[in-house]
Structure formats: C-alpha cells, structure tokens
Length: 255
Ligand SMILES: *[C@@H]1O[C@H](CO)[C@@H](O)[C@H](O)[C@H]1NC(C)=O
Ligand SMILES: *[C@@H]1O[C@H](CO)[C@@H](O)[C@H](O)[C@H]1NC(C)=O
Ligand SMILES: *[C@@H]1O[C@H](CO)[C@@H](O)[C@H](O)[C@H]1NC(C)=O
Ligand SMILES: *[C@@H]1O[C@H](CO)[C@@H](O)[C@H](O)[C@H]1NC(C)=O
Image (cartoon, rainbow, N blue to C red):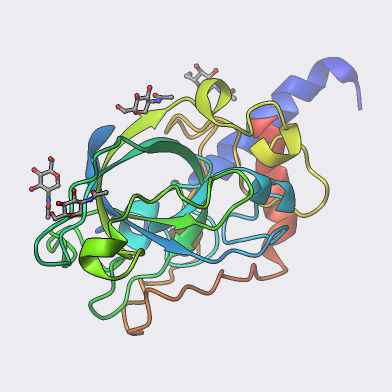
C-alpha cells in the first residue's frame, strides 16, 4: 500500500466502524461526572481478563465492575470500559444504626468489568428505577487486591460484631486514568498494549467515539439481561471469540 494513502484508508474504515455505534437498544443510564453511588466488592482472580477484555495486568491495580445499565452493555464490552473514577467512602446504611467512618478513604479505580443487572441486586438500577440504596450506579470493587490495603474498609467490630458491611454509600468523581490511576505507567494495564487478549480497554476514554468502547449488546441487538437474581456474586463475562478480530480493528483507532 502506498503509505500516503494509509490515512484515507483508515478514515474510511473508521467511518464504517462508526456505523456500528448507532444504538439499537435504549435505556442506558446517563450519569453526571460526579455524584453518589453504591459500592460493593467482589473477588476477581489475579490475571483474570474480565468483560472489557483488559489485559490480565490490569488486576495488579485497583479495578471495578460497573452496574450494567450505566456500563452500557449487557455483555462483553461497553462505553464504561476503561473509565477511571475516584471513589470516596461516605457511610454504610444497611446496619442499624448506619455507620459513619472516622477516616476518609478513597480509591481511584479503572472499570474493567460488567456487573450484571438482575433481581434486586445492587447492580440492577435502570434509568427509571434506582437500586435498593436509591442509587443509579453501583461500583463493584475488586477486593482484596494487591493494590488496595486489606484494611481499606473502615469498621467498628466492637460495636457491630463484624467487619465487612458489604455495601457502602460513596461519592464518585470521573478522573483521568493517565494522571490519577495507579496503573497509569503500566501500558499493558491501561489497555494500550495489545498482547492478543485485549478486546476493548481504552487507556483514557473520554466519551468520544474515537476513544470509547461501543456497546457490544447494542451492536448485536442483545437486550439487557435482567432475569437472573444473582447480581452480588459476579461471574466475569467471557468474551465470545469471533468478536476479537473486529475489536482489534477498533483498537487500531485507539492507538
Ligand atoms: C464504635 O461505635 C461506638 C458506638 O457508636 C462508638 O462509641 C465507638 O467510638 C466506635 N468506635 C470506632 C473505632 O469507630
Ligand atoms: C449517601 O451520601 C449522600 C451524600 O452525603 C447522602 O445525601 C445520602 O443520603 C446518602 N445515602 C444513604 C442511603 O445513606
Ligand atoms: C479523591 O477524593 C478524595 C476525597 O475527596 C481526595 O482527597 C483525593 O484527592 C481525590 N483523588 C483524586 C485523584 O482526585
Ligand atoms: C478523539 O477526538 C477528540 C475530539 O475530537 C480528540 O480531542 C482526541 O484527541 C481524539 N482521541 C484520539 C485517541 O484520537
């Protein structure tokens, strides 16, 4: 190929790829860049490649799954993939009385996984109906994690009789992954190195079509799956094999 034609050819391919971004399913939750949310935690094995297809290296740093209707896809990758948020613990309210920590704890996470909606689970908010904590977003923190202290969640065992409250009220703020995420200097963890396993894990998604994942389920006409009731114990979604080649094409534009 004549090198000078390359930009035009890529431009045409890119325009064609944009056609795939036209949503066919509505109802995703639009959220502000700052607000409050609920926070749960789940076990994500080290090195695991979760729904976004970020490389296994991402598990060395703080990551989280995002609730389905805010994440923007009911399977595989979605617009939430790769975004970074500063999460600050505010209080817990499932115990009586509610618990307000005496210290302020925050963590900057990168979204690498989908937290499926279903039943009354914490990840089941829809655009019309918040979750049982009154929030439209739930972050499911991968914890324990080598990058987050084991005593990250404050507790008061002598009063409550247990340490893990399970769910927290948090404030969230959309932040720059490149500036603020602990894995920012690790290109593989950021998603900007393709080792053959990365599917759609932009280093710094801004919401623009050129740097943000499309919704896999919109592209494929898959409706949100809200039928299961097991939303607290998450299984990371396995990526259907045939999509990897088209996604690699997408990664070309992120590079
Ligand atoms: C635990 O809760 C009790 C009752 O509210 C309070 O008196 C005590 O100071 C708390 N301890 C800590 C470490 O927060
Ligand atoms: C969560 O925190 C916000 C901000 O402090 C507060 O307005 C809201 O009532 C809290 N929600 C619960 C359920 O505690
Ligand atoms: C995260 O939020 C906490 C609490 O507001 C703040 O102290 C910290 O500087 C924030 N971190 C980033 C990277 O924005
Ligand atoms: C995507 O487009 C925005 C706005 O046009 C631009 O600022 C940004 O640099 C682009 N990102 C990439 C990765 O090309």
